Image (cartoon, rainbow, N blue to C red; front, side):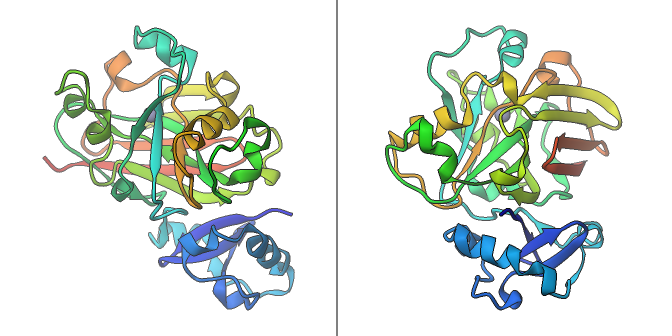
Length: 284
Ligand code: ZN
C-alpha cells in the first residue's frame, strides 16, 4: 500500500511510473484539492489501489516539462524549517551542536513547484537540499514511537536562503531570509513512507550547473523525523499537510563561497524520492 501524490494544474494527482492520474476523476471518492487529499490517507491508498484499471491522464515527465506540476503540498497551515540538523553543517557553520531543535518558519507563500524558477535577490542567495516531511493525521503530543504513523509522505525541498537578509538582524531573522517568493521549491511527488525502503538513511545531493555542492545522508540527522514531530507536537497541534524541512548537510554556499548566480540551475535529489531542477534568475 503506497502512493506518490503530485499537484498537476492545481489538482491532486497520483503518479505511477511515468503515468499520472487525476485523483478525483479516478472516481473512488478522493478529492481534487491537494490539501484536502492529505486529510484522508486511507482514501489515497484506496485510490492508488485502483490505478491498475484506470486510464492515465498523461505522462508525468511531459507534465513536468510543461510546467504543470506544482508543489505536492501547496498551502500548509505551517511550514517549519530546522536549522543546524546535520553535524557536517554545524561544523562548517562554526556553531555548537544544538541540544534542542533549532526551528524557524518558512512562510508557506514561498513554496513553488519542482521546476520553478528561483528569483534571486541581492548577491547572497544560497541553496540547501532537504528531506521534507508532510504530516498526515495531525495531533498534539505525538510520541516519537508512533510519529511515523503521522507522516503522509516525504518529498524533496530546497530551503533557499537570502543570507544578507537572514543576517541583517542580530540575532538573525531566519524566517524572512528563507521566505522570499519562490524560496521553497518542493516535489516533484510526495512519497508515502511505506514506499521508501530505508527511510531513515536516504542519500541527498545538490549540484549547481553540474558542480557537486552537497552530498549527505539523512542517517546523519541530529534530530530524527520522529524526534522532530514529537518536539513540535508537544508545543502545538500539527495539522494535515504541515511541512517540516528537516535541515541540510554541509556544502552550502555561504560556507564554500559559491553562492547562486543569475542563470544557474540547481539540481537536488533524494534517493528513492525524486529530483528537483530549478533555474535561477536575478530579479533585484
Ligand atoms: Zn535549511
